[in-house]
Image 1 (cartoon, one colour):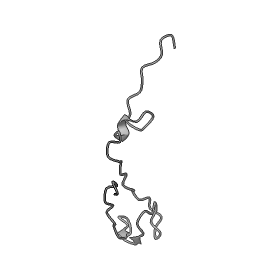
Image 2 (cartoon, rainbow, N blue to C red; image 1 turned 30 degrees about the horizontal axis):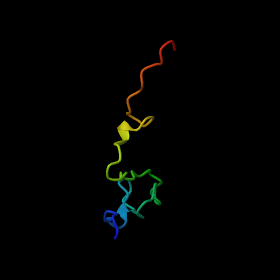
Image 3 (tube, one colour; image 1 turned 45 degrees about the horizontal axis):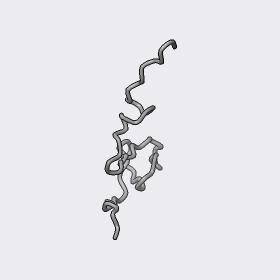
Length: 67
């Protein structure tokens, strides 16, 4: 029995800058080189990125006493 959630399969997308077709999962447009945002999918029950120590937007711990 498989307990993994179903995976949505998406086709190619278009570059928001030049409109060229971009393969799924590409980090940059093959036509103009524009950086593409890759969606981040967290596993069920995984902490949000802002709660991961060292992640952008994560709270910084207070300084150690005597530091």
